[in-house]
Image (tube, rainbow over all chains, first blue to last red; front, side):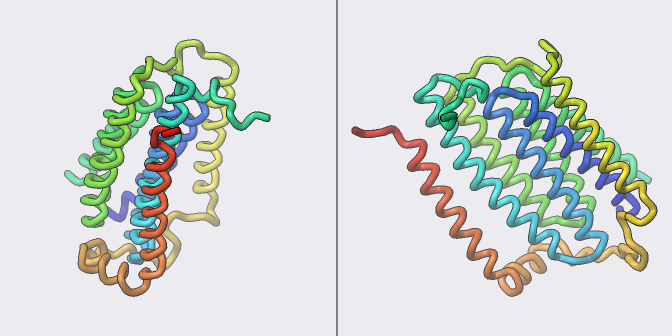
Length: 101
Length: 171
C-alpha cells in the first residue's frame, strides 16, 4: 500500500478542492457544513497516509482529535442553523445578515 | 495487484460521491453521498492499516455526525438549493477558477524536485501494529493524555453550547 502514498495525497488534494468549491458556491448552510466535513476528511486522509509512511503514530492521534473537534463543530453549527431558521425561516446564507452593522 | 485495482476503484467512488455532495440538488442527496464518501475513506484507512481509525470513521462520521445532519434536514424542511451548474453566474465561475488555481498550486508544489511526498531515507516499511486499538490506546493515555483531557472539555462545552443555542426561548 505504501507505493500508493502519492495517489492518496493526490486524492486528498482533490477532495479538499471539492470542499472549497462547495463552500464557495453553495447557498444552503447545511450543504456548506457538509463541504467543510469533506475538507476535514481529506486532511485526515493525508494525515493517515503520512503517519503510515513515516511509521509514526502522531498523525493518527491528530486524526482522532480532528474527528472530536469536527463533532463539536457540527453540533454547535447545526444548533446555530436551527436557531436562525426558527427566527428567519431560511437557511440561505445570502439572506442571513445578523452581524452586518 | 488486486489491492491496486481496489484502491483505484475506491478513490474513483470517493471522487464521484464528493462531486455529488457539492452538486446535488437536495440536501438529502448531498448527505447520502457524503456517507458514501466517508465509507470510501474508511476503506482507504483500512488499506493503510489504520484499523482503529477506519472503525471510528464509520461509527463517528458515517454514524453519529451524518445522523445529526439528516435530523436537522428533516427538522428544517429545506427547499432544493440551486445546483452548481444551473444559473452559472460570474461569482460561481470565479469560485471554480479559484479552486482550480488552488489545485494547480498543490500539484506544482509536489512536482518540485525539492519537495517530495516520501523523503529520502523513509522506507515506508509495513508495520501493522501501528494502527491497532492497543497502540492507539497506549499513546492516547500516555503521551497524548493532556490533549485528550482538553478534547473532553471541548466536547462538553460544545454539548452545553448546542443545547443552549438551539433551545426555544422561554420568556
